[in-house]
Length: 81
Image (spheres, rainbow, N blue to C red):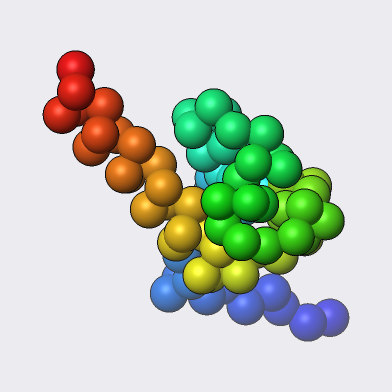
């Protein structure tokens, strides 16, 4: 009988943390963009954007670019509002 090793140094899992697909879809919604419009803005294929929105791994550069678009939109809205 083997004992289960308790690794107290491992961070606890947070199952409430959104997936990359959820984050991408939320950012598209904040931007008021469709998947096709988001793909065009990032200069990626619509197929890639569909994959990212349905759970395929999202490259870090795509996530950073989406976050930047949201940030830019917020800044523009603050300046004009």
